[in-house]
Length: 218
Image 1 (cartoon, rainbow, N blue to C red):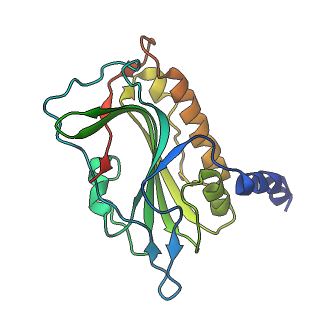
Image 2 (spheres, helix red, strand yellow):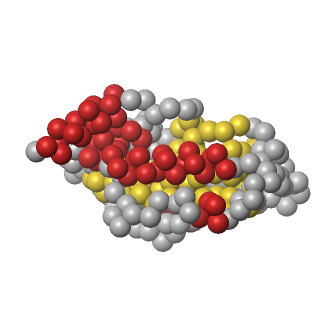
């Protein structure tokens, strides 16, 4: 009981907080479940990696001049094949009552080659939502974590880096036995993202920068 009272201020803060920073929403603002069968309904767009042949790939952080942004991608059973272009969860089967939300915390560069291409470096967060309720806002990470803490959603996370590696980076990746995206999980993820982003600079010892192609809407 004491632990519940200690958590209440944190939960109230997270439920009312807006996730800071700008975002690009590639889908609906939330997951809406069908009252009849509980199936998850989100905008299941298809994503791809462009085939870039004649393009000068960015090599440094300084080259990534389009900005820093959170980019949200949403997956359901209909577009689960698109997971393959993100790595980390290839082959995962998404049930009819499940969803996967991918959040890229990226510094990036948009380029016009034979087709539009986006290169970036940063952190990629995978959220596997196995239980949800009507109106769950998957693009508000603090609220999603708070709802998981309250048992209104079941969410597990995986985190990886894109285009940035090295011993200093590897030491910052959260390693949890459960990977539950609750209040503690949210704090762990955001802490890691902040620390990694602070190291995304050119010529930092122990950090290797190699911008990678970022998926775009097909």
